[in-house]
Length: 482
Image (cartoon, rainbow, N blue to C red):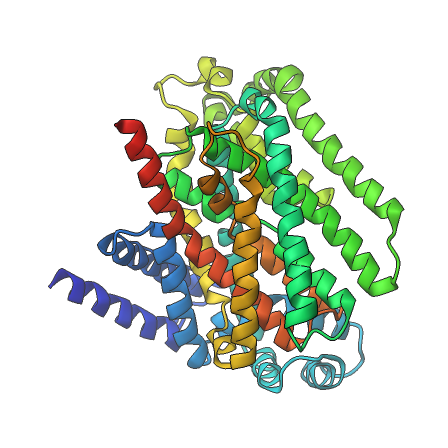
């Protein structure tokens, strides 16, 4: 009975959200409040279903996001449409803002004449952007995505709190070797499969780019599973997280190299050197900040913040490090992870009168916003991509080699580590794979068909990781308990 009531409430919520009735009040945020309410209801429902099937809660959030997103998209819900095509719409706004024609006419002309989007997508975008309330829809979509971004930043910050810099340094060489193999194997396998087994890949440069896309790793999904299963203290978990951070840096370097190769026909070594220098400089800054700077900054910060220092300083540092990482070309989640990495409860002894820990303080915020990220990842999945058999076959083939490539990352680890678990932890491509795919599409390397193929790889590697990782963790933790 409870299950029926739960699904009925979800159905009513979905219909209410699809109606896009913001109410009679003119508050510009009223629809955003409603959208966030329904997204959280969807997340809770997804968790409930996942628990019933004894799966990770994050998997439930992803699947419910895909299901609800597909339903609302089929009903022409403008918020979901705007979220799904946010990047395209932002580019269109930038390109048409300086044109003399009326906005609606400029949008129609630009979409039809200067984009290579599928005709159905073109009409969707035009319909959304020429609607009377487009500005509100666009702003609401941005607000929702802001909550989503905040969710994944908080998640990685919480993960960073569980790992110390001394542990990261101790595992430095091991993490580096795992990350290197985790980039090389998927890149080579992806290139070979794309070049010789996928007919729609017509040039070597495209095959190279697809290989580079498979080399990416998303830390968000794996980190969430580790956190949900209370397994962040395992040496394999710490190794995976350290390798994922290094993997992200290597992936960005590889992306810069490959993008330069496919767009200009040659590699810009100066750009590669600059990226490497920025990445190394950021990591050095993080470790130096923990050792020499933070304790002094906290003391001066407390002069202004007073009793709120314990809450405000960690949160502001999280935002600052996320911005710094983004400013030098790294993913903001790397900055968020590093912010958690350098903070310890001991820094706030004078300002923590209630005996709380940083995890107790920030945990509730992460518990609210992180599910938004995973549900919205599901919203952005186009399930129609599964309808083309050629696309589906290519996607499945590349998914297999994408998984195998990461599983091989731990092949040379010593027996003290569970090699299979380390490999599984690096499998999901998630938002990092989506970033690679969007860049490939933007520079013209990936057409609509190949873009859909990459999206399938991202979806499947993201979906298979939680259950595989959960199964392996149960076996390891069960063995440890014995």
